[in-house]
Length: 244
Image (cartoon, rainbow, N blue to C red):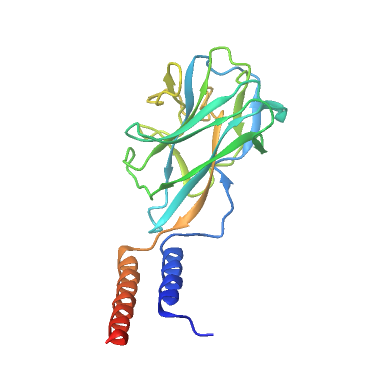
């Protein structure tokens, strides 16, 4: 069966959009794998705590990550006592997306963290040196003495962050805890002066899931757009000749 010209254009448009931004063969993947927890209690205060990250894929042009879910640690996996707001920020403090992890067992439990979905946030490839404008921060709101935060979560021993995600900080040392003070969901602009791997807590109470998205070079996008414009003009000329 032959397709009419408008239908052809519609199909090609859909195909071009699929080619312009298409996910790689990845399912949603946690930024790091939980290694359980230590019994020592992390610093307790009212505010946000989390970490700073980078899409460290400067060698893979067009290799964006799409942050799709935000989550908080659930010790024992038996449900959260309190609800926790979680946000993702750009390095300049712009809140890109947020959600609330409800109390109880409503949110999906994956490897010790309870997650809720967000509208995907695209993070472009970053590069050294750090800091740089492509860093992003993820943090969750906790209250002083919060019963959901009585232990210090840890990563799997010897395991890093899931590539191409990399932990980062303002001064170049790896994976410090970032925090913001105050009620609500303050931007975590402050950070602990203790690198991960020492006795200091890196605030792994918060995790996120992502997948990899391929975004073609501008030249490819321009080529696809030019092809669509040609088809549109050709269809318009065909219609005008038919009327004459």
